[in-house]
Length: 203
Image 1 (tube, rainbow, N blue to C red):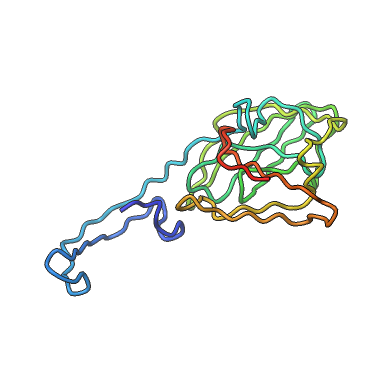
Image 2 (cartoon, rainbow, N blue to C red):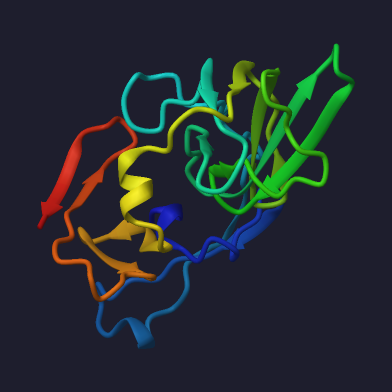
């Protein structure tokens, strides 16, 4: 049995479970007797994460970003994580805020305490798996430059893109793009993995 094939909310880290097994070796499994049981527990170790460092898709560590709509930073995804906490701080400015999201992507926009143009901020990320938060494991710098141009693909695709299921199963995913206008004559979709390798493309 592979734990990742179960409903993610069905087993919790740090808890003990009683487990029994039966098979169809002697006939239909529904008529089989359960074997002797045993107690098992799941650990609560959560893998480290931080902003993506590789110079491919999602690279956010030690980078320059705008503060505003469609400006993002990306953390390294953690398997099984349901939430990510981004800590952004600048000791000299007295800025120290945390932002919790259900995805490893944080949009640098709409903060109650906005990031200031021309300032550099330190960013740490940790993930939550089941009911357990991991630790902050690394620090990256993000400099705010509001004169920076938006990426071409963000200018051309102003709508919201949704991809599901996540994680993908059986190699099949669904893609939905909102906000496409009638004047749009050609749409090109390139899907890349977290390492920047293209896994699908269609025009």
